[in-house]
Structures are given as structure tokens and as C-alpha cells.
Image 1: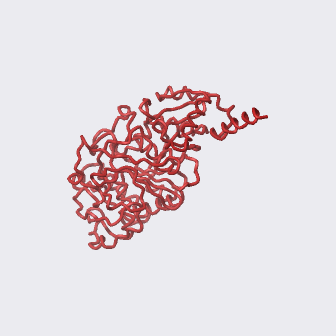
Image 2: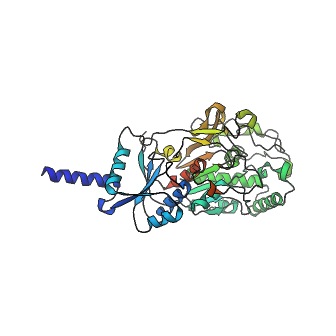
Image 3: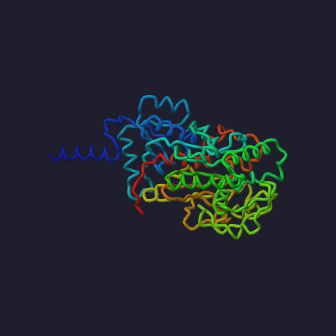
Length: 426
């Protein structure tokens, strides 16, 4: 009788650990995400591919850099080989050992079940230039499908179709990226302005800035209703500036045909914003900056050779969300510039979760927050593998950077919505 109880207890442990019967997992595929992995970025695409095939994926938080595991089903090894992703086939007994190691109370590790491939939208103009966006570059490289939407789709109420929304390096203030001083004679700039004005007219707005204000309001509703929002570079600060300035004229005549409200600064409402408070607008239309949210080069005290930021370490068992978003094979990430590079820490709201910062410079590089039923993540800089990616430069070739820690942070956010919700422990 004692022997039977022991065997029965072992079987129950197996079911509890694995989430499905032992017989269904004769062997397991482990995709390591530490330095042993040859293709970190494509590994995320593999995880997404599995989810699309209705195969549940285990995300092993803090285990070998945030590894993935799945049952060794027909076709899995072939797909891994085609993508060049490093993997190991291990027995169910070996995988039980991994799970037991992760479950140890003192181990800062946990298992997150990924269940369903999120539907991804990228908010980006149809005439986007190739230097514009790191997220579309990495999604394409990782072979993760996405749909492009822009103002028409947002204003027509299409956002609820999607789980995850990325904001291309947009200027939500209606100042066309503040490129007027340097690029106003470029054909692409002039076309961008014509397209934006035509869209505003189609939707009954007299000005582009008014249309963008309505767009950010719709996006705010998307997040509050349970959506996941991710933004980089100028889409971060201009999003909050547009929210704070709803109903105000903050732009000068070359952008909308009439002068800005000289008292706009005093009328900003910081209660509406996601991340930032008490910021000061940059009113000069010829200055390539929107506000003092963004740290300036002369303030930062770093250059290309020593620009790094550190990722925070969170409790995997008690704080699974930030732990997922900071999975990496290193805790120190090479910095990179953008129109908005780094967020001034003194202007970040107290309820925002900082996940990456350069403490010495007083700047935040990566942060996260909640709104209603949804969440948002802001990531400073333009291209994690091009320190100062300039307008009209060629796009980055990610085949030269398959293990990029900076790009991994983007892809953590892609898989985050696939996670099975757990009860909060804190």
C-alpha cells in the first residue's frame, strides 16, 4: 500500500508540475536563452510559431536567460533547425528536474505558461521610411506576423481587434517630428504632411494636432479596456504631451497655420498622462525636441563607448510581469540614442515601474505601468544596434545582431500578452 501511495504521489506531482499528463511528454524541447543560444531573436519567433499551432509554451523565467520549453511534437525540431535556433531534447525526467529546481523557494525563477499568440498591430504610416522603426525590423527578422494600422483604423474603432499595439516613432503633437528646420524641403517630409492633413480632413478635424489628440484618446481607451501598449523613442513623450495638452494649441503656424497658445504650458493637465509629470514644453519650432522629458547629450555625461543602462532584478515568483519584461542573457544593456533617448527620472510619475536605468545620469530607459485592465511599456531610444541612427540611413541588418540584448527587450513585450494570468501574490 505504501508503494502504491508513493507511485500515485509521484504521478500527481508530475501532472501538477507539467500541467498535462506525463504520458503526453515523452520528451521535451528546451530552448536555452543564455549565452549558448545562437539566435536569441529568432527564438522568440519560434515561441510565437508554437503558440500559433496551439502548442502551450513554458517560459522559464530567470532559468538560463529566460528559456522556453515545449513538448517535442512532430515538426518542432525541423522548424527549430530551419530557423537556426539552438535547442536541446531532454527526457521528461530531466525536465521534471528543471521544474523542481525552478520551484525551489529560494530560487528566483518561475514557470510562466504561454497559451495564445497575441494579435499584433503596429501603428505606422503607410509611407514609412526604412530607417523608421526597430520593432517592425525585429518582428520581420523573428518572423512574427503583425498588421499595420494608422490613424484611419484607430479612428474607425479597429483597435479592439488586437491584443498588442506598438506605436511607431510617431509625433502625436502634430509637429511632423519637428523635422521642419532640417527636412522641410525633402519630398518625403512634404508627402507626410499632405497625407496627415488629408487624413485629418477625412475625419472632420481642422488640424492634424486635433486628429492626433483624438488618436491618443482612442489608444488610452484601448489600454484601459485590457490592451497592451508599447512605444519607443518620440512616441513615448509625445503621447503624454498630447494627452496633457488635450484641447490646447501647442504648435506654431508652420505646422497648423496659426500661432500656438502662449499660455499652453500653464494649462497642461498631468493627471491625464501615463508616465510623465511636471514637464516643460520646448516651444521653439526649430528645435529638434518636444520637452525637457528627454535628457540632452550634454547632461548625460556618456558617449557611445560608455553608454549603458542596467536592468532591474525582480522576484520571479512574486513579480512575474516585470520579470518577464526584463528577461535577458545580460543585466547590462548597451545604450542607444533617438529623438527621445532617455527619460528624466525626476519627471517620471511615482507609480511607474522603472525596469532599466542609468542611475548615475538620473535617467530611465525602460519602464512599465498599468491603466485600467491593460498595461503600457515605454522604451527610450531608436535602434538598439545603431547608436545614433540618423534619418535617411539604411536600416539595420539584424542578421548581424541575432543575440541583441536591446532587441530582446522589445520581444519580451511581444510574448507578454500570451502569458496565462496568475493571481497576484503581493
